[in-house]
Image (cartoon, rainbow, N blue to C red; front, side, top):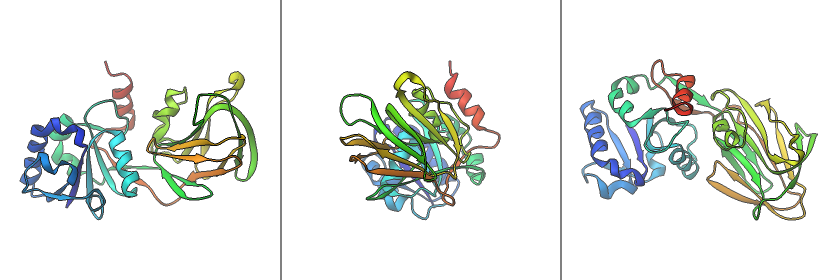
Length: 276
């Protein structure tokens, strides 16, 4: 049994998706769809809520884009599944297949479902709760943009007093997201690394640094007012003065992103970055 989660905003692809369903049935593969799209497709299909859709499935196909994928993970907490991302819409660095490519190569992709990249996951601990991030955690002001003060520690040792508009701690997966848009490097995904990137530092003298993922970062709000941190663009949490957040990579937990045969990360980056 496989799960197919479709972004409800992408149902204008209804006809093409129905063609895909027929191909899946022809391969004698059972599948479930998410309840949000029940009104658009045949009642004869099997539908589930998103939590059951991703639970205990040998494979989960997500039709939408990177944002659809990240939102689903945060809403269900199922970070250790095996996912295929089919991009419909804007550029998606995680979505390694266009719909056309996925449909054309369906048999090969499914038969090679054990060819995947293990995405590192940030383990985030605040004083009140624990979270995870596939891409990044971003610290910034909750009001108008202005310089903020952060005390930074690496493995409980004081590292830096940062004065900047914000701060990003990113996995290699998230290196092509907001870290890249602020001038940070793109790093090949799948590597167990953490990227430190300040946003508009004072005097522009704070370089991006790439650390091994076994280090633990502690970020302390040293301002006299609350700020916020946003996780994967999906969850935003207030951070009061003197509160701190710790981040490191999970040692065991990995998220599995399925690729296809000879398709490599370098190929995906070339397609996304230099697409004419």
